[in-house]
Length: 311
Image (cartoon, rainbow, N blue to C red; front, side, top):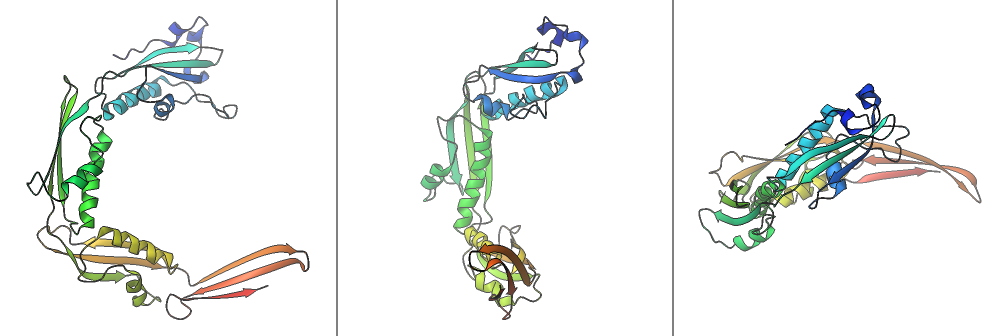
């Protein structure tokens, strides 16, 4: 139960005569928190206490904002498996003419633990992938049930299968939370879809750069079994050539879950062909000196670069 008491009740000084806009927060105290540190909880708050540079910037006290902060802490605890956690504003105390201290009280209660976790792949409870996937999942029997772990589990499964050539995999998750016993039961059903190969590669955005520069830096080719990491690494490799200011590689055809073929679309924006850098220094022999460097990309019509220095 969250109770909001008039600010004047918390101080022997005439607080009622002061407007909220005239009051600033000197300090925030968190009480009763054990699973999370004060700093972790305070990071959730819009309401901030005075800091090192508070002389230049002070946080005004706002009751409506503090109410939202209290609710934010409560939601955080629930997302971390503490479904019965209680968060209350215990005290707002006037400590000077324009400063208040805030005390937030937390009663965490026992967390909800994962009691049961079932992973089914293509309708089967066992497969060559089960041991590795179960080890990768952040959800573990006996551990606290966290919403972040629940969401992350789906991403981990999809990423894992995409490395084995299954970019069209589908993951369905269900979780049953028993508030009375503080237990959670999690069910994960996976449909891998077909193993896929790359059927076509399209390129958009080329102007001066030759098409072969794209294919030279791709780590896959038509007919290869799909592997997600090669898509990501190819994107980085293309960008590292400095021929492009923008590189995006999109996998197409994922909506047709029956087809064993996917396409790849490479989008690029070419970088400016020339870069000029200049600098000045001071040498013991030649005193003040300058240097100009001209770098020409695509000078030979491909990815090679020509550098010219003048000093």
